[in-house]
Image 1: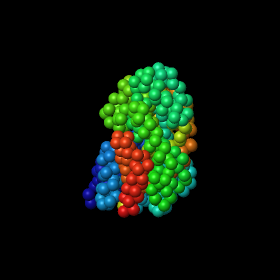
Image 2: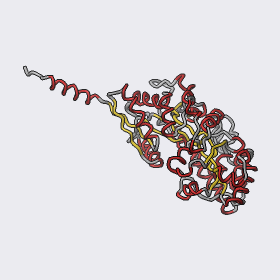
Image 3: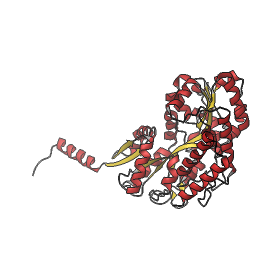
Length: 413
């Protein structure tokens, strides 16, 4: 009988262990892919026999790949990352697991998360198909140096949309700086104000378009039109090179987005402007969200229970959620993670302002809204009609009527 040396036994055990190793895939976009990689060090201590492959793609490429994967059931990851803007389409696809059912059984953990984000990840037909990990409480970032020069107070910016526009007039007169990058930014906020429970931004409970009938849209278009008529927007689109330059050079005063924009300004958009920016609430103290990240498990994924264990670590672990906020500006969706000294610390980039506490307050005031499959279609149509109002002088009533008709037709297909 052949004798085995200790070295041979150890080698055979190592080979067996390697053979038993489970490989799972996480598909993500920047900087979620980095957050997942950073979280793996702790998670893999408890899961040494699991290898995690993080497939990172650029934002648009990632969602295109996931759309194709769900449609064809090929190339599906075990954990799928979804940004809020795509959530309605993916949630209604029928291709994602309901996390409230076995073997996942979300149960009482749902109450640990920000309520509006949980509502966003829920489908009336398919259940809780996505788990939130970070949220984007809406904030208004502004150049304090430009306000000081124009003798405009923060309260004038936030009191009302009328005083917001008047502030922009003073700022442009004193410095030549525009109030906002694009009038569309203002419309995006106004149409998200006062949405009734059960409805979405563009659709009612039955999935019917409310673009023509809801006063939110008319007011949003009117304020955007006023800003354009007064010459207060730079006519540049977010994330364009021109937009980035305007933030660096101080030719745009205000940018309204999710609280995460502060980190982007500091780290790569305008790092040389430290101390010049401040953060405050949106005009009329509107509490709304901008974006947010969710994790989901495809129904045809292979390693679902391991995938769910990783998702729980990423979303329900307070330490992990706090680290993601501190390192990557991912505002936590887990309520327990919204505590601690980090939220009370001054933010040097924002002139020593304790902005995180205000973002937390805003997050607590955001009301749940429903996402729909055709939200992205509706957004595209509404923006196209607003462009016709701003650039071609089309009447607002006609633009909203046409947008409603086109969205309703496309949604009924």
